[in-house]
Amino acid sequence: MRQIVLDTETTGLSAENGDRIIEIGCVELVARKLTGNNLHFYLNPGRDSHEDAMKVHGISNEFLRDKPKFSAVADELLAYLADAEVIIHNAPFDVSFLNKELSLIGRPPLNHCVAKVVDSLMMAKELFPGKRNSLDALCDRLEVDNAGRTLHGALLDAELLADVYINLTRGQNSLVMDMGTEPEAGAALQIVDLSAFDLPLLMANDQETTVHEALLTGIDKASKGKTVWRALAA
Image (cartoon, rainbow, N blue to C red; front, side, top):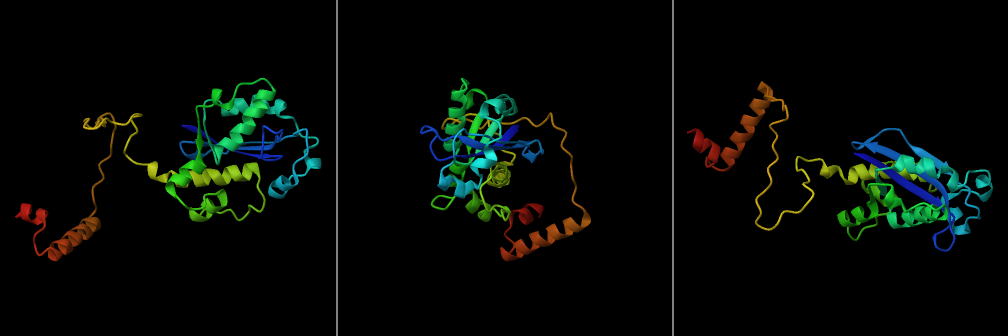
């Protein structure tokens, strides 16, 4: 599966009130591994950033004067995002800005291009209800090094979010396969046929066998000889 972790920086908080995107950072994951195929743009928004926004991202209006407009990078961005699952922290915010930029150049909304948008903030709220779930808070909780994050930056934040997302979803790496639908009450459990897979048989070595037997003996003693495996062996 190809996933893109995306973040933006903007001139303010409201796309509907005329605020624009000034930076887009994208990090690619394939099979949950960072590929290094990242995408990053600074953009000329055609307006100044609000003072409070500049305190957050630290990107000056002067720095953006000679940067491309969104329209100049739209084709490259959409081609990069095409058919991917896009992961965004507080997705409604970034998606609203991306959709506004797309509408201004006559393009359809983001969901027409990508396979799915995943909101990592909503995931974190479900996993850690009642706790702070900002990117910084999640970095601290999940032991992701964010020491270099003194100001918000779209590419840096996307890189941090990629690590956070991998840690948030680590428990999904299991042998339980998602069949796409919830089983009805009382329905038989679907069995996955593994016969097509060539699964290696790994035998325990002598040391592992000795440790295992010692553990079983200890459990047997604790239960005063009532363990089922000892009874069956007898």
